[in-house]
Figure 1 (cartoon, rainbow, N blue to C red):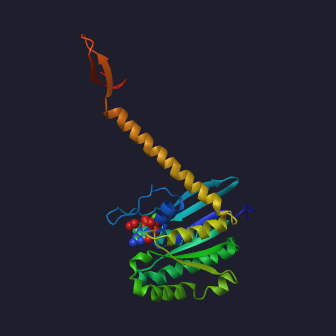
Figure 2 (figure 1 turned 135 degrees about the vertical axis):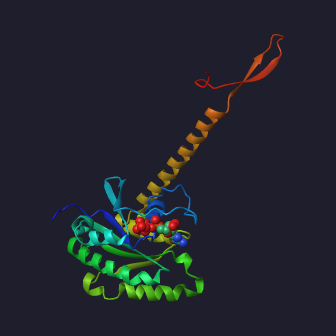
Figure 3 (figure 1 turned 60 degrees about the horizontal axis):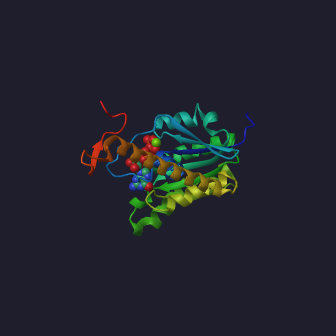
Amino acid sequence: MSQAKPNKIVLMGLAESGKTTITKFPLLNLLNHSFPTKDERFHATIDYERHKLAFGDKEIEIFDLGGMTSFLERFTGQLAEFIFLNVKAFVFIVDSIEIKNVSWAKYFFDLALKQLTRYSPMARIFVFQHKSDLVPKHMRAEVRNTIEEYIVSGTKHIIRENPINYYETSVFTSSIIQAIDGVMSWMLDGELYLYHQYLQNQDREKDFEKEREQLKKRNQNIPEEITYRDEFGKLKKRLVPKKGEED
Ligand SMILES: Nc1nc2c(ncn2[C@@H]2O[C@H](COP(=O)(O)OP(=O)(O)OP(=O)(O)O)[C@@H](O)[C@H]2O)c(=O)[nH]1
Ligand SMILES: [Mg+2]
């Protein structure tokens, strides 16, 4: 077995539970601050997507696993060593309102835990009970208790003393940021500021990108205004196309 340092975050859960949204928006800060909208088209992840981040000499790999049953069977079966080796944080996403699927989610959660104990026994385990915004406020405590009890039940003997870190999350509230901070703090051995620096740099990149876009538009669409004197010496203004746009 490889002796490489554990550096992987694996996100797993049933289809449409929110793994890719969590990976792209709160974790990688990639969606340019745009929250998912109701009419946004949903793209199922095929197989898995892998992202690499560097924090000084620390490198982190994020595996966003596709949630379709056939993929989950492969990840916990034939591909188990590839997926579960060198994992430092395992994040299992369970949908707060798809109650009818919770036992199916639990089935794959238990399979994953078995593979984790085999390939990455020191991995920390996180459960995100996601899309909590869809649960009416007065039912939240009850829904949480029911799902948490069920998901966590019977896992003690598999993972021994390693506790499960359970969070209720939604990308529409700061709950997801707190949960991701919990994962990243563990990944970076407490040096969470490295992750926050990375997010700030991402924001700066985005601002530059916006500026560049605006400049490009201006250069393309708005001709330059020049001031000149006519034959009587009067100051006049005239628009001329930008260089490169003249025919
Ligand atoms: N209400 C609500 N919807 C969310 C939240 N997070 C994600 N979604 C929506 O859930 C749907 C599925 O999200 P994805 O992130 O693509 O799901 P996934 O788990 O990657 O799905 P697969 O790739 O098929 O496994 C999308 O329509 C998202 O906009 C959330 O916190 N609240
Ligand atoms: Mg996905």
